[in-house]
Length: 159
Image (cartoon, rainbow, N blue to C red; front, side, top):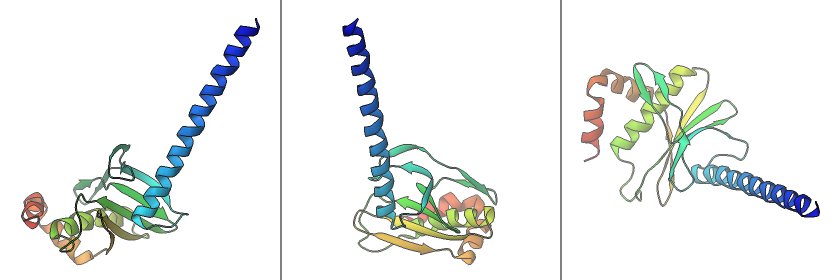
């Protein structure tokens, strides 16, 4: 009987320790994402498609607005501000590419259409820095007029 009780206590201790470590790992991931994207500690992660180092994760949030659909790598809420973020697998060297600016602008425009009262801001995270991107409504409107060819525009801008 003592062996059964001891085994049960040991199993419960292992389960407790595993859940504690898992919770700690989630907390570290959240902290790392906030640091990497340069957002405050009080910001809430609404959705994410990546972990802190850019690795794939399974909590994306699709945005549907103005006939467009997209999922930023991470979406934060900090008070009345929504922040869409994208990881880029390169160094920033020559600056932000047009393709990257267009992509984050599309996300910001969709967020603004879905939540008109919210302030929206973008973050492009590279290996060596984080760039803030302000929403440009004129650029978003232009991209919408090119909706049929947006993928082609994005591909051309990457060159």
